[in-house]
Length: 350
Image 1 (cartoon, one colour):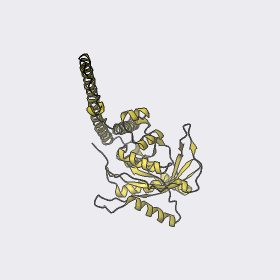
Image 2: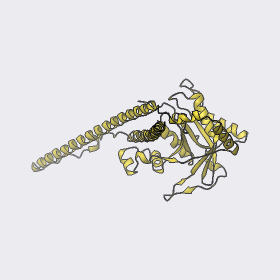
Image 3: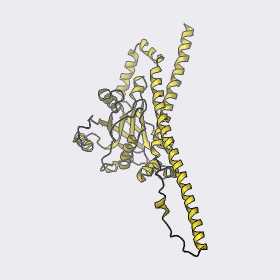
């Protein structure tokens, strides 16, 4: 199965948006502060796309840092810079030091240099992983307003820009702080795959000159190029998405087997413990009838050590990724059905 390999991104611990003159933050009914409607200029979007085109190939994942500030209830992403590609042989490379040097250089030229999050590319929507969870928790714990931008180059290459912003929900942040990923802890916090990440709507801003340029480019485009929007050759994309979906379903089945094995072992141990206690009660009753002292008390936790429950966070992440694949397939197939009806209507007119 496909599993993206990339190092987690960690935020420098001494960074915080509170070190500057920022606006107010809203609060929900539960007392959690949040920043809504992140906005970013077109130059940030172009830099992210260019970063993938230059260094990303196929399933290669590229990452970078988002810079900006908070104005009123809006998160302003004004700039970004990429993480350089390095291998395991580059043991001397320090990512945190690299970030600090980059921000220091940007500050010298009077460019916004405060962290507001990070970005990452994805391969067919495969971004829900433990590495992304740890990275976003590191950022969001150090910088409350931070977000992660997920860029999908495959969807973008088909003519529709795919750029989404995500944050960890307050419930998941509490679970990650306590590091209690047991089934009881997740059940107590009411954590499911559907409420692990929250998507934040973003607004992409263009200058007036860029809008004029886009209008001119649209006027100059030929009619033949527009017909590519009705291209029906989409079997490769759908086949790859379904293959990744099946791989994750297999992973989920393995997690279910692990949990079922844990449940059987726990039930078997409980039965053995109950039988042991019954035998001791019978033996003590016999000793009491003979006028003998009862057996000394024993520490049952040492005799019967409970089996360790498997961590459930992996199962939640797999379920979240399966849900993401299903949503992608649903969107893709609905668009193709529209193309088929349009193509059928055009063929009927000819």
